[in-house]
Image (cartoon, rainbow, N blue to C red; front, side, top):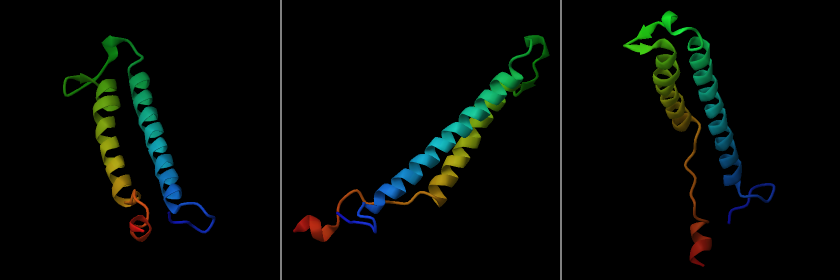
Length: 95
């Protein structure tokens, strides 16, 4: 197994960083969803506005939120996540 400077496999550092990014993305998604769903959707039904035939609170929380999250996750995966081999060093593995 490869060892980093502190004796740990450096893949763990990458995995922890990517896990925290995933948690942050989930929190952003929840705040977005909750803010629009309960912010716009808490009033009387008679006062609702509509976007593409859907109540605005639903459109912005679920439809626009989904599109936003697809973009954010795609951006994070493309620019911040690294491909990490799951197997140990080839030389060590064949010995």
